[in-house]
Image (cartoon, rainbow, N blue to C red):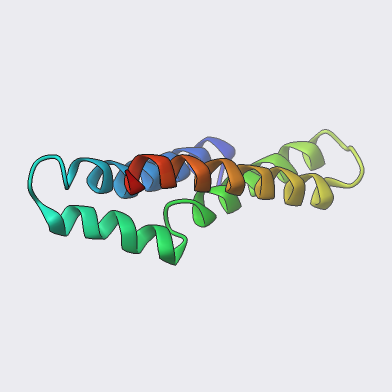
Length: 94
């Protein structure tokens, strides 16, 4: 898969998990809010997009012929996971 498709997939996953979770309680549809919570606990809203971002970073680093592309992918993925987790908790958990 190309980098643009991986990033697009990560964005689609974020939208499909964060948006229903954040607006579900506001519009009176608790099932949508529950989807946000379940996807957060399952890692769909933060771990899966972070994995895709890490793969894109590692691929970009490797394509440039630079060393340690796996380490870069792991560092970027873990950092993205922390950012996604904090934002998902703020958005869906409130």
